[in-house]
Length: 268
Length: 82
Image (cartoon, rainbow over all chains, first blue to last red):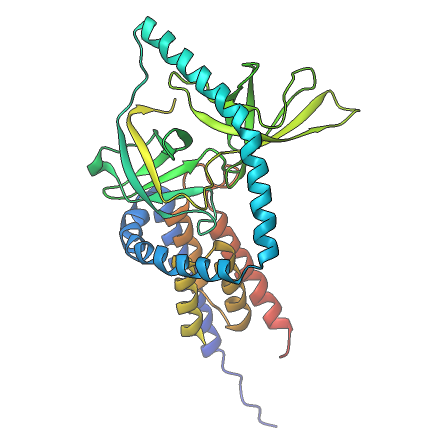
């Protein structure tokens, strides 16, 4: 019997092609690993062009979605927002008092804590980004450097600049999952550590003996007082000596369009 | 089909949430054999949106996801008859 030998030339070629493609991607990854600024410096200017058109397109989709909402859900949301405003009025008054006292004490000691803010437009935000990062349209040509503090709605500290390129910058939000931030409880002044949970949400564990209530303000231990958050929920377990506090930033990361970058001070 | 998936992934990366991009990439590696572009898109996502802080300190989550689903999807495709 005569048997035709099975040709393995095509299999060898296919295997070589696969190895070649895998080697190529390994090289691409190593370039990103050893030169982490190379790809962003190439891709960020390109993505920023599309991001500027994105706000119009997704904004239109958002408006259409709101029109489709039922009246009942809108009334319910309205009631919830009214209750939230009422609960925050007391905290706002306390914050104003603390701010006034703080500024006068600093003036006595010869420190004002004023910075120099540069306005930036948010090009990309969560959930477009899989990480808790923002991409803004100002960079090193505008005086932005890594470590600069980033504010939303005037005085709400939301993050710091992670990487600054020529015309864009990446901002690490303080609420990035796993990120640890020292905070002060507004009323008691107790310093504890908060852990980011993503999208402007935080959690903190503190002893049950420390009095804290829903609506209490959270500030950062910096020379310039920053509104950092408002306590949303306290969870106490009778068998645990610690209580869990959940709070979130007053600024809604999904809705803010502009940020201010303080180019005179850096996050330590 | 490959071209359609590539266009959909690029559009999703630019305009839509990351989880939609992840779903489209998953569909692409499942439907299209040896969808190597998924690895490139993982690297690009990490390059554009990632920082040293990353996700719980890990800066290459998107790349790892792309590699993992590429390997798993191709392994399943070899064993499944459509």
